[in-house]
Image 1 (cartoon, rainbow, N blue to C red):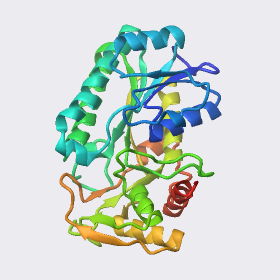
Image 2: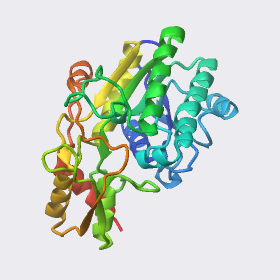
Image 3: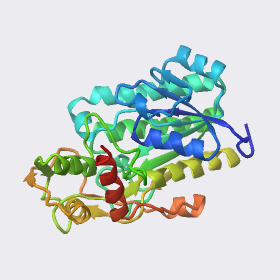
Length: 330
């Protein structure tokens, strides 16, 4: 496949039952693409996959299953979300992350290659940088993960580099900073099991009138809590669309930060939650979690210049408002 993506092209979305994957599936349909979903549902949810979407339950590394997908629903490109995402869990069970995120993806790439499928968007993380040398963080800055989750993603990035160099696999790596938010109508949102991200955890605690734990007040930041760059999931979907067009129209290997270039501390998140909801969040401070970096904010120059990416929904108020609407949907 070369040139522009054909009309009504079919895209394979792995992890389409997950948070970002489910938004991607919806976004692709809205843009006129056909979609096929592959998800083990170990941590995804079948109910977020739209009706009548071709769906295959299983591991991405299963060659026989991939062959079945290709035979029944031949696709032109892959957007690969499937994987485990908890930094905390990766510190407790590192082998799980190297097996699920790195080894399974290596098997997947080998299987894709055997079927001559050579276009892939890979879901990576700002966690590949570890504690950065400078902020904002540029794509070419030092990569030194502070946990196995970040390391497992960085290993795949390196594999993709060599698969491009040796086999001509076209790829775009998207290093997400903090994905968050929900659909504008509140019908689709963030639902992990277990949930570890600060915004949904805090909102759920507020809704259920439970205590919220704020981990770490001794970071090297202005208010002592860690600082992150938050990007709305709808903006993330747009970044994937732009990256997909890029690798089709200009085959090669590309790496992009996906963020806003602005960071918010955990205490600022709490403050905005209280402002948006009009409620006081009952929280207690605890020691920081091992492996957490002080500050992660993206330099977004490359993705803006190269892809024309401009976040539309990633102001903190919109993020919290949409997430709160999702949490109050029932």
